[in-house]
Amino acid sequence: MTLPAGQTVAFVGVNGSGKSTCARLLAGLYEPRDGGTVRWDGVDVLDMDAESLQARVGCVLQDPVRFPFSAPANLTVSRGTLTEADPQRALDAARAPRAEHAVYEAVLRDNPRPDQITLISHRLASVVACDRVFVFDAGRITESGTHQELMGLDGEYASMFTLQAAGYRAGAEEAP
Figure (cartoon, rainbow, N blue to C red):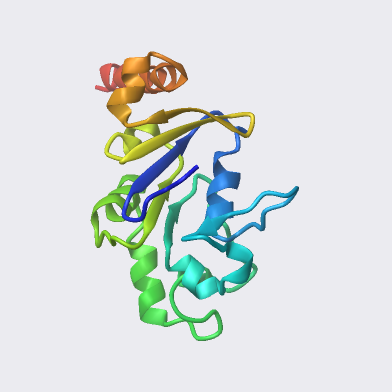
């Protein structure tokens, strides 16, 4: 998989398909095993310092990582040091992700950086605007493309998207 800088990329698939593991590998939260490597501009992530690696990836995971630190440190782990978490920054961060949609909107549209890759993993409605979508199954990429391209394939992504969209429509029809 090659991911050009400046893109917003979505990983989708059923639970256990490998999307979160791949995102965590790219973000440097997991180290590659079994002979695999992750490289940024040809440099192995194992040879990079954590700060420069984290500066390259913005990540919204379906199961957020909670580090064994204070709440302010967890909220500000990607900015500054864990031991010197800025209380105001932590408060601002706690107020900002009140709604899941707002988090995705902030990641997708606020302060895009041409030197960073943004990874999204979770609701399919949030991936429609992504530059590229990768569909995972059993640890392998089975489809990739834009939302429109994948809908045109009428494969697994189209099936998942249609199923999720139908659930939203049914819920809206039942609401008073």
